[in-house]
Amino acid sequence: MEFSIKWKEKMAFSGQTPSGHEINMDAAEEIGGQNTGARPTELLLNAVAGCTGIDIISILTKMRLEPTSFQMDVKGERADDHPKRFTTIHIHYALEGELPEDKVVRAIQLSKDKYCSVSHSLNAEITASYSINGVKGEKQV
Image (cartoon, rainbow, N blue to C red; front, side):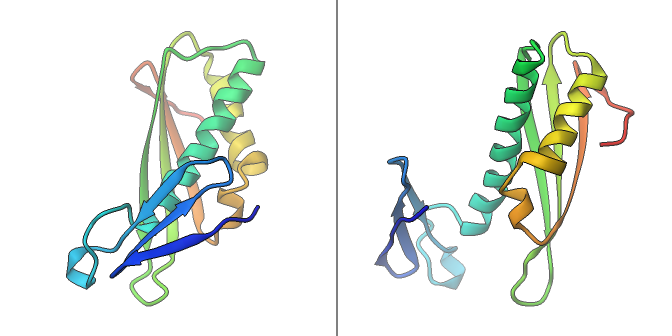
């Protein structure tokens, strides 16, 4: 995968993804940015969640299961010292629909342990929890 990121001005950058989508990035105003785009760290957490979300929907579809709703709440903790990397990332998967708990847990585990290339590219501990139809899951993920 190759693409270019271009400097726009001050701390702002813009990139075109190989799939043809534009991504704008910028820093916060207090460090010289103009807040014209997402922070790269925000994009990183979104990428982890998006990757696992795509995996989970794909796996559930192969199991002939279809959620009626699916939301992920993501929390990332960063180190205090530079490079201030993410040390832990927690994703809570909230699914709705006729979904057997063991199948949901299996889909999350497969994404977390095997398929999500984004999370496997990071040096952070990534944990997960889930709820189905508003009921917190009890199984270990």
